[in-house]
Length: 129
Image (cartoon, rainbow, N blue to C red; front, side, top):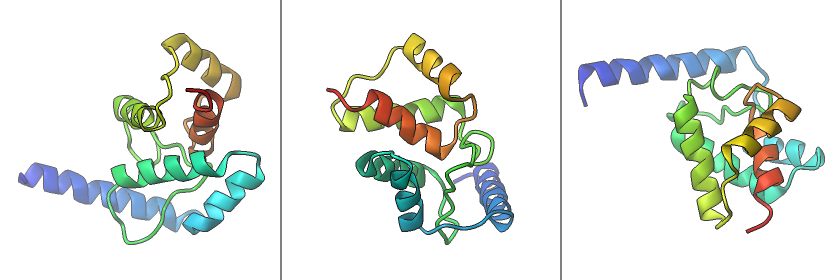
């Protein structure tokens, strides 16, 4: 790995650790239970958490929070987030929603790409093959 990539990864990990210092940490089980109590499906909650965790660098603790904006807080760009969601739909063997359907969903439910909203997105579009 190049020195630049190493430096960027260290900066990313430092940013994530700092983010977590300023928020209440939840365990993975607490996050799953919280979102399922809100009416989101357990299966999709787990899938979204697993996919986000597989993308993020390991910072030695579970860091996801339902209200964190994955683009702003976790430094995941739009394209990578699209790839994560596409992978979820592909693994579930569900058709990925059209760009227009996605736009309408985010206009209706929120413009901030929170962990909670991503599970809602998968629940909304990922229930029918």
